[in-house]
Length: 334
Image 1: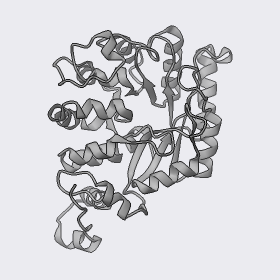
Image 2 (image 1 turned 180 degrees about the vertical axis):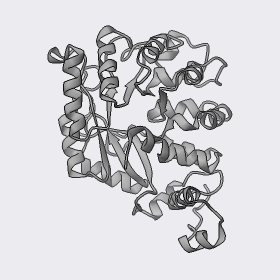
Image 3 (image 1 turned 30 degrees about the vertical axis):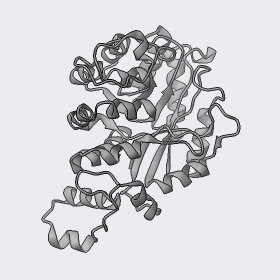
């Protein structure tokens, strides 16, 4: 592993680089992240500079707080922020889990909003409600609930991880409500939650029905679909073979401007690491709609994204977009 190089000072950048204001700001971002040509900051580089300068760290679009499956591993908001500091993450989106299929221990929107209120400069709250909730049956009722949470600071809806077909009528009501409120929706797809078929035809139905809603893709079913030729079994797993032509993700991204990808979890890392050459080309090709994420949800959890991106050779401007710029634009962060 290559050791971290010293960061250039602001004076050096000003005196020796003929940059526009935007290019200068981006150079500062990359310097603050310890980035050198073709490389994301190493773990050693991140650990060596634990303090985060405003406007320089990663923005993680996918984390959780509370208990997921193991009651002995409860992640507090303070524990999340400590981990963020160790990994140069400036802000994290915190996602509730409100469907019985999503977790053993539900994580409410109210708990996420409270954590973000305590740490407004670090945590970005999302909101969520199971579409089968009795009092959220109509689109009007859903709009009222979601708008109330947005008024309290919620920037997105999710994690939408529900044991229904992706385009079930109850699910479509949620999408309609989010489109009306005007926030993006981060979803999970596999063969159990947000269920779809190879080719992601149910997702496509939602994309074309609600063109003003920005969807953010996550989960095994989404990321396995970077490859063509999937079997139903592979849609719910982590294929390790080389990517085959005809993947649904590229196809959908080429035809629908309202679909994004969240690189979090083992599924996100696997989609790139299974075929590094294709993965690198994919990230460059879809650089405007890929978001950095980890799905960090328990103390001591291994996060493969950092090690993976130390291996990848990507242009600096692509890294900057994935690291933070795309999230700032999509979530309207200031």
